[in-house]
Length: 513
View (cartoon, helix red, strand yellow):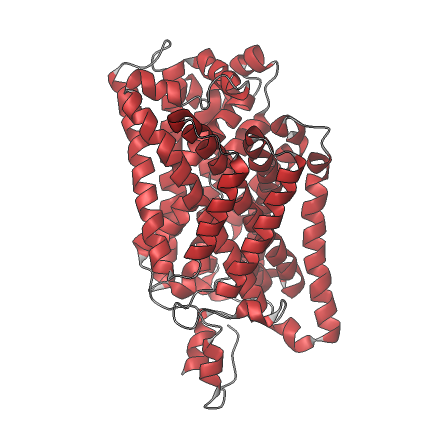
């Protein structure tokens, strides 16, 4: 654990501007922040069709594999989180396990990924807002208009206390989960779709060369199915990012992380199985094709119409908008906390490491995230301003880049956990939790990265697009830029270099004592 030399009497007030609000989030609030980042409704309505296009009716099996992989990864991750509590998350963990150079590369990459995730999900929500409001009221506002509105709202919330954001995320989460459960119950009560209740969707072997995917889409791609599954969990690892603002963070990290991974896994398997059951084995792929051809706005809407009624469909149409916004806001908050952590430790402009004087949130970092998200979305709008492009380009291409970056960082973090417990924290070493589980986690993430890169043309539907071709190279470039920054600091500013990934909540206590 790093130490901070006691400061003179005037220092605490100055240091206070770099400290987040303490002890304001309990376990329910942290779970709301995490699980809403995963956005169950948006994950199902956006990612299930993507996964079906690659794995056909075997989507539930893809979610089972992803649940197992992420649960095993979480075993070592939780042990690390119980030892190191800081808003830096992956950045802090990798810095402590593999050193400042690797940590800085990961810190810059993960911040970049979360920021563009906020933009991607804003694009998805804007697509649904534009199409639904046009259907309901005949008011045709292009998706980019809603993008501007959603970004303005996220920016406004950043000025308020994190507890307000957590409450908003909690309401959105409960509402969308209830809506999906009602749909699932309706399918069960009706006895399922044309093929009844089959065990085939739960068989992992059916992810590969799925006959329904081949029949409808002309090919099957396990990488596409697994991408849709893994993308659904992005954000599950956010618990350490809220450690400084949580009550008893070391105690709640295990419950928050396992609760989000396993809880989401069970829910995703159940809902995706109900989706496939409702449509039938081949029918699910045909429904997704109809959605991608623009014949229906979502493959979920006809299901809710048939098994429950139009009232639920309308509710889902509303909730997909609020769910996407809540998800984007969760990513926005996490991205700002990564920038805040980097700035507080002197590797980015110090102004980004200051908090609001009364609300104690990272307001300067948040405003920077707003600017980056705005410019990023504007670039997509200039390229293609159509409403459909906000879903199929901004909302689909961006996650390819972001998920690859996240999976790569998770793999590196697995190695960092192993080294940390073999060196700095030998007393906490456990043969399975801090060695075998991280090794399995690393191999799972490496395999998922390979499948994503290999299948990125099919995933995007635009293999010739320069953006898609550059996806792996952009991830590598951002990581190398972070490494270059660390190497520069090591030579020219050794004091700042030593601070990389070293600020923890315990340091704050020592400074303020």
